[in-house]
Length: 301
Image 1: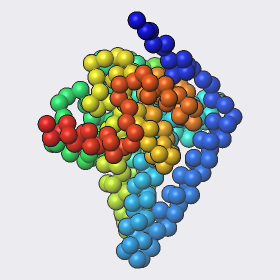
Image 2 (image 1 turned 180 degrees about the horizontal axis):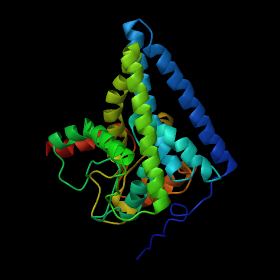
Image 3 (image 1 turned 45 degrees about the vertical axis):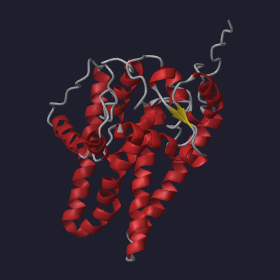
């Protein structure tokens, strides 16, 4: 009987190097340039330029949350303190509060495959798939309303964490960031009320409406149609090899088995682990199109 050697690299921890840090800084710079370009186009009078600008802004707001995801794992910089400094503004356009996301997402890693799973974005991959369920997840604008409620609760001293106990320090951070988000929303509302509503619509509201479904499509392949009753990352998570573009745009979210196997490994180190994923994991696709074909067939059944 032949025994298969266990994976050697996939579960190995690794520190963030100066090269990893530089790669992340370059990603931030690319995000800034493309966001600025989107803003310029969105404010142009030509309808085509406006549409392109709004779509580009939506794409960048989605991409920013994927960069925020790396920051919350503290795998972008060698020191810990820059992660919150960078992570908080990355989530503001999509109303994602960094420290709240961090607490719930780290619990998701700890409890994946159990009823205590607390994934931050609320699509439940453990229930049977239907077209209606996918549509509700795709257009999950109710999350924005729940964030607004949390902002009010934080500002009035009534915010509480719903998924267990957290430290007083983390609670203070989450409350502070909700209040900061509330201040940003009030500032934007004031700009709209003083005659800048067209700019607010083009630069934020319309891109936000598009970014919600875009982000859902990025996140959906992670665990859906996998063995969500298992705690084995080789069975309960999916990786997609993808292209250089999809790897950049999702900030390595396509290599999700590699990420769950060693969650604090810098994203730029994950591609080297993919050959082991292909060898040992159950759910590995070549492209996003392959995954969505598989999803469509499952929904039709």
